[in-house]
Every structure is written in C-alpha cells, then in structure tokens.
Image (cartoon, rainbow, N blue to C red):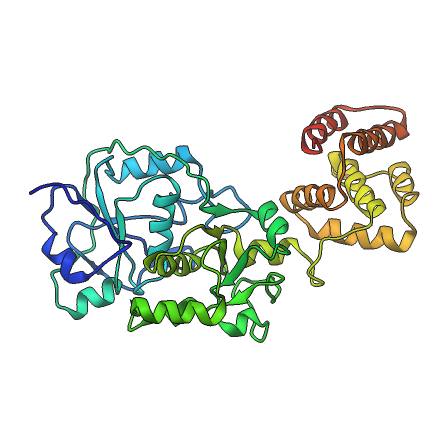
Length: 387
C-alpha cells in the first residue's frame, strides 16, 4: 500500500478504519488524563489497535514552565516524537477519549513544528466505539525510534508579551474558547487560586459550540458560528483556559479555510495570573522602578533596612507597601514578566535602563559591600533589562 498523505485537518472514523493497515500510519491518543492522588486516570481501558499515547503534559509540554501545557522546545518535541516512532513520512491521526478536546492541541503542535501530514479523528474514540470498530486492551507497543525532525514555524503561537501588544490592536480578534460562564466571570475557574475574567477586547466562542455528539458540525454551520462573533477571517487569536481547547477553534477555522490564525499558549491561566483584577499591569514609572529595585534587593532573599529606605524614596510608604505585597505574592517568573512588560509600557530606552541599573548598583552599595549574590543579580538584570 502506498504511503498515506493526509490533506484535510480531520478524518472520519470510517476513513481511518479503512486505512488501518497503511504502512506509514501512526495513531496517537492525545487524551489528557485526570490526576487523582498522583495517579493518571483515563476514561477508557481500551484503545484503537496499535495506538501510541501522546503525553501532552509530561512529554510534549515544557514541564519547567510555571503554567500548564506550555509550548515545548523544538528539541523536546523532536525527541519525544522520535520516541513514539514518528518518522518524516508518517501519516498521523490523533484522537482523544472525550471526542474532540485535547486531540486538536496535538494537531496544532505538529503544525507549529512544521508537520502537516496529520489530522484529528472526527468524533474521537466515542465515535469509533459507536461504529463498533475494532479495539484492543490498552498497551504500550514497542516501536523503532523515528527520524522525525521538528522545525518551528512562525505564525502559530502567541505568548504573554505578544498578547499584551495585540490586546488593544483592532487588527486582531481574540476569541476565547471557554464556557460563557467562565468568560463572563459568573462561575469560578477550575484552577485553584486563578481569578475569573477575560482578556480585554476578547470575544467568547465556546469550543463546544462547534461540536454535536463529539463531532464537528458542518462547514456551513462552523462558518455561521464564526460570523456571529466576528466578520474577520484572518488575524484571529484563540485563547482558552490553558491553550488546549483554543486549538479546537483553530481546527474549525482551518476547516473552513481561514488563514493567519494564532493560539495564545498560556491563555487565561497565564494572563489571569500575571495581570491584576483591574485588567492592567500599569504602574507609574516610579512604581516600576520600586518593584524592580525590590526584586534586585531580594537577591539574597531579604532586603535590609537601607535598601528598603532607598526604595521608599521612589514612592510613598503606602505605595511601597502595595508594591511589596504584590511582590510577595509573585513568583520569580511572574516578577520577570511584569518587569519586562513595565519596561515596554513606559517605553524605556537604553538610557532609561542604564539609569535604572545605576539605581540598582547604588542600592547594592548602600550597606558598603557588593556581595556575590548582588553581583549575580546585577549581571542577570543587565541582560533582563536590555532593550
């Protein structure tokens, strides 16, 4: 049998059943399991024959990132795909056990890394079972290491700094795939401690609106659904809770021929964590300087009184306390992201940065010495603050 070439973003279960014996076919299960007491729980104990598990959370995400399902590196994606026996000529069909949910994320990741011979199984495993197609007990099949090579493509993913730039840009349309109650803030977010809300100027298009009985609705229906939300067909940005179901919107949009689509990787989990309840990261310039000095002062995990007094000189005591409370609530990643965003918001040029670095060095010398922790922090901030 000739090698399969997949030319559509989705394939039917009947099509897959017919092609099961194709020599270059690889079937991936992209289900994200529930975690109970540290154990992964899957809805199903059976699978499509010869399925391989695509582990989004552990193998195909940057597990060192603060936020879930973060975009992996080119090297990580290459290595993990090769471990699954993916080759340069493999025809990939991906499904999940909910129907169409996380499988779309797998499809989008392959496209983002330059691979197009991939499709989502329309209806997923529920549709496969409903048609009484063959299954097997879940098992791990031994496979030969593949020769797949990821090649990162521009124009697929957006990250935090990108979303800050385009959230006020009328040339872009941000569509949020979460349920309406979450988008409007009427129901709490499932992630503990994450505030409710939505990205400024975004519009709501729940991914489930594109599905009936686990399958995508017709192309005409998808077009109608999109047109009710926006007349734009390009420069669409898809968001959700953590970058998973945003890809379902991307799948639907590609199916009807839309172009120039982007997925915001961190989605609301990142945005809602890094941007405060007033939906702004705007500090005054002095508050930004105070926060940055406070970050620097904690190079040895505790600022002393002299350092604290120098920071207070930049703002009043009440503002200092507010900045300090915010700093205490932030982790290192959040602090860095906020400082970088603040530099852009206040249009810092290199002269501004040099002045800020001089303030930092002055603070470090306040106690009469420039210790090893402070030297390391100064070097790091010199790179971080470069514009």
